[in-house]
Structure formats: structure tokens, C-alpha cells
Amino acid sequence: MIGVKTDKAFIHRQSAHCESGAISSLLLHHGLNASEPLVFGIGAGIFFGYFPFIKVYGSPFITYRNAPGRILKSVEKRLGVRFETVRFKDPERAMDALDNAIDKGIPVGLQASIYWLPYMPDAMRFHFNAHSLIVYGREGNGYLISDPVLDEPVVCSRKDLMKARFAEGLLAPKGKMYYLSHVPEKVDFPRAIQRGIKEACRMMIKTPVPIIGVRGIGMFAKALRQWPDKYGKRKASLYLGHAIRMQEEIGTGGGGFRLMYAAFLHEAAHIMDDDRFVEVSRRMTAIGDAWRQFALHGARICKDRVVEGGSYNHLSDIIIDCAAKEHQVYKDLWKIIR
Amino acid sequence: MKKKDVPQDQGILGHIRVVCYATDENGEYVKSQSAGWEPTNIANGIAWEFLNEELAGILEKVKKKELSPLAYHMNKNLMDVKLLSRYTGFAAWRIKRYLKPRVFNKLDNEALQRCASVFNMTVEQLKEVP
Image (cartoon, rainbow over all chains, first blue to last red; front, side, top):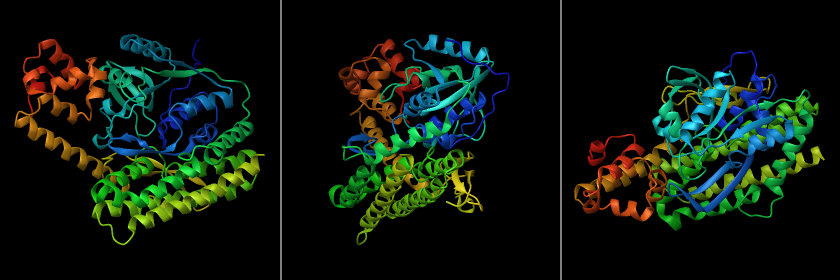
């Protein structure tokens, strides 16, 4: 299938999160008015999962968003757009296919590993394979890259980009590239928003699995209380630091995506012409701020390595409060969209 | 978060500014740039502190000839045996053997080259540790 071309030059737009940002930029480039929060909400990006049996750099895996790639799939389904998505076995062929598309003037989304991207700040360069970025041109032996989380476009060499596209391990990108191949004449945003919210509610409050959704937050809060006794101060601070990083480090927009979701609900109120979303959005903002309080207090504990009378208990209480408030938010959203 | 409260604590991001979602005076959501946030800087620092400690321990063992330089470079690149095995195409049990100085020293150039290219370095660099 042939990608959709436009005569406009590609504009770099900075986003909070890589996947929703890349999709939003591609849609906006093709004239679809889909902001990053809107893409995030329609793609039901909001989530919580606590997986103590999966270890990432030695710490239990915690996530505040749905699985990488899910936003792209959901947006396709709900907006009726089509992204031609290709994976490759051979790195050279993958680069040729990329060259082919960008030489035709089609901006291309790529999945890549942060670790092999030299333009990323060193402190961020872990083996995270599900980073998204857009390539929109070539200059000599370098590629012009619009990395959604960065403030300026950057240039990356062919060798480095190839390595990043063929990283190995968990969520290996296998050269995944995607570009818009079909944009419908009319897009039903209200319906897409409704379906996005519905899926988010289902994941957060209607799942039978206790480690995901609002119940997952509760599990995490309960486990957190036991960390200092169970693992010792040192290890507990490593685990806690990891949770804070997953929540606040590059690409969440603050408060573990909760603030971006609040922005989405605010936008939904305009599009759906329904003021009830404004009120829920305000509550979601408060929840995002509460999560940030958890990060703030947690970082202090990590830094001082002190576990005075129940400081982990205090953190746990903040999270339990978040869980209760989030539960109410999704319950109310469920009622509104029904 | 209010726009005026968006933190500007420089640290792990260097000169880069990231975006977060904050509300302006009218309660509307706006993308606001942030130079970083102290709690994130601290949390990131802790992750590196643990990784660097582990690396220092391995470096010591390499110097005592208990481990090969490959162990150092693997760890320096935040890899474990499984991940390095995926990158090189060598089976995990072979990588494990290569971590022994006795085996590593007898490796042919091709095997060394395969490991070195994963770390974007030359064979000579692979044989050295700081």
C-alpha cells in the first residue's frame, strides 16, 4: 500500500509521551486534529500494572500505561485511519524501506531502543526497546529525526539508527516502521472518545486480575509497606526509586500519565459538549498531583535511606488514597459514557 | 499541577527540556516545558548508583583474573548473559564460558569481533578494561 502524501513540510511537535506523541504528530501532519492527549485517551493509554514477578534491572516491574503498540492499534480501529505497519528480518532491507518512504516525502514512525540512540541524555539510556520516533528526511548519511519527547529535531547516523531498530531482548522492535496509508474523509471523534474511555474503565475497574487496574494499585500499596522489612533499606530504596522513575521519568507528562489523561478529559468535554467531563478532569488532575506527592516523599526516603517510624507506610497511604479516588473517577466515567 | 508550579530542576536531562501537562489560570490544559524534577533526578541517580556499584565489583574481579574483560563490557553496556547471547548469536552457555579469562584468552578473532561490534568497539578495546 502507498503512504498518504501531503505537500506540507513536516513540523516537529514536542510531546510528553513517545507513542501517543508520534501518532499525534503523524495525524496532525495529515490534517487530522488529534492532539497528544486525545490520541492517548482514544488509545486508552491510562493503566496500572504491578508485576512483582517480572524484574527490570532487579526491581519489580510497575507500569502506568498500557502495553507498547496498543495505542497505535486502538487509534487505527477507533478513528478509522490506517497505518501501514511493517517489520523486517534484514536490517539493510529495513533501512532501504525507510529510505524509500522518506524520499517520497512520507514521514515514518519507528520503534527503536533508547539505548542505541546517541542523542538521548546518557542518564536515560537503558535498554528500553519500545521507544517511538519519527523520521522525516535525510541529510547526507544522517536521518532527520523528530523524537516526540525532545524539544528540537535531531540527526542520527544510519549505523546508530539501524542498531536501535534491531535491538534485542524484551519488546524487540524488529525494525518496525509505520506510516499513514489511509485517512477517512470523516472521523467520528465523539464515538472514538467514548470507546477509548470505555476500554480504560474496563482495564482499570472491571478486570478479574488483581495485579492490574485499581486493584493493582492496592496490591502495590500493600507490597510497598513490607519492602523495608522484607528486603532491607538498601534494596527497598532501589525498588522505590524504580517505581518513581516509571512514574515520572521521561515520557509520562507527570503523575504517571494521570495529568495527560486529565488533559484528555478536558478536551473530551469540548468535543462531546458535555460539562460532566470537566469535573472529572479536575479530579483526575488532583489524582495526578497526589501521585507526584508520592514521588516527592518517596525520593526523599530514597535519598536519606532513613526508614523512620513508618515512612513507607505513609507512602502506602498516599497510594491507597489515589486508588480510591481513581476508582470513583472510572466509575463516574463509565456512567457518563453509558 | 499548575503551570507556575512546573519544576525546573536541572539534572539528568542535561540541556533538554521535556513537556508535562499543567493547567493555566483559566483551568485549561497547556503543554509546559520542564528542565527536570528533583525526585526524578534522585530516583535516576539511585538506579545508576546500584549499577555502578555492581560494575565496580566486576571490574575488581576482572583485575584479579577471576572474570574476563567481556564480563566488564557486558555489564558496562547494561547487558546480562541472555541479552548478550541475543545480540551476538552465541548460545548463553558459550557466553558464560567466555566470561572466564582462561576461555576468553583463547577466543579466535571472529568471536571477539562479534562481541566487540555489539559494544561498538574494536577487538583491542574489548580486551582492555579501565
